[in-house]
Every structure is written in structure tokens, then in C-alpha cells.
Image (cartoon, rainbow, N blue to C red):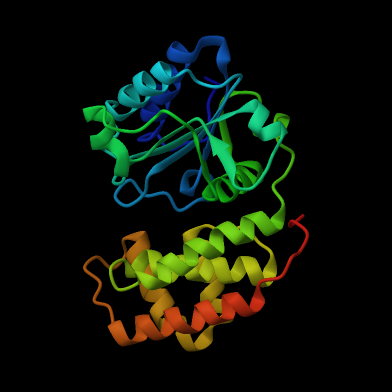
Length: 265
């Protein structure tokens, strides 16, 4: 593990456990572990956030290693973080031969924990994931390297249009489910609109602040989401009519603003 990574004290032991397990299991094949998401962008809260990690390996994982590693990762004590661990393993060759969507060797997230524990996950073939374009963009922009050389040693950049395609697809899902998860829906729609409008990479909280500054008519709703996200106003009551209207209008703005553009400086 690289010395003194800039991570909160209550998260650092978990990251050390994950990294130690990866190092023990993969040995010299482990090239890099990078933390992205809210831990890198800012705004991480143990009560509501997860730990997001990308792992680079020297060669494809054998089937038995995928199974063993997956079960071992979901057995780690990450329950102290609200939504757990989300981790993807990529080969260095896949990064060097970058294409969209990017293939992965292994993906572990809370949605798959029970299947990994039961040994029912289909690991016969690797898949692809459009979200990796967004994860890698954040990792390259501000990721925290906790093992090995920086991610930039393996990939210099992600095409901006790939990043936008990935986050716009996520925004469409967030808009459709905004009544089920209003906090995520409002802040995610703001940060995606900020990305397609100003070509910036934003955290959820910064996306909300961008929305307050640029969407004055929606500022009260967005402030409510920010306060709920930061824990200032627990037990928030949401206006379903305001939420559905915000989702409809913001998705229309996003789709109207999507253009192919160079990556931010």
C-alpha cells in the first residue's frame, strides 16, 4: 500500500484491508488500486456513501481466481460504510487498448454480495460496463492511488464523449427513479447537467452547488437535496410534484446540451 493516502481515518482501515487482500491474492499481477467516487471528489459520508475502487492487473484473471477473490472481497468488514464496496478489476491490456464500453475481469458491488457468497454468480466470461468510462474519468481527474503506480501510467485519458454518454445514461435512470431516491436523483441530475454544460467533473455536492447557481427556479429543491446529503436536515420531506417536474425539465436540458467536446483542462 502506498504511504499515507489522503483518506478519512474511519475509511482507511477498510481500504487497507481491501488492498492487502488484493496484494496477497494477486501478488505481482496487482499493478494498481485507485480510489474514486466521493472519496476522491469530496463529499464522502460514512452514513450514505460507498467505497469505490478500480484495480489494474497484469493479465486476465483465471476463473477460479475470480470466484475466490469475489467471495473474499464480499467477506471483508465493509458494513460500517453505508452502501459498502464497489470494485472493478481491469487488465492493463484493456486500458492500453481502450474501447467503449470497457471490458472488466471482475465486478463486486453490494447488489452481488449474496450471489458471490452463495457461489451463484456467472463468472465464465467477462463483461463490459459503460460506467467504467465515468469511473476512470474521475480516477484520472482526482483519484487516490493506494497501491502501485498512478492510473495515468496505464491510461492517459478517457474520450470526453464516452464520459458524457455514460453519465447521461445514469442521469436518465436517476430521473426515472427520482421518487424512490430523490437525494441521489436531484444531485446527480445537477452534476450531469453541469458536465454537459460547462465540461466539468463534479461530485454530488458540487453538482448541487452548480445547480443552485445555474438553476435559480429549482434552487430551493436543490438546497433541500444538498442539506439532506450533508446530514444537516435528516428526515427530509420531499415534494413529489416538484421532483417529477425537476427530473423532466433537467433531462430535457441535458439532452439539449449534449455535444462532443474536448476533455476539461
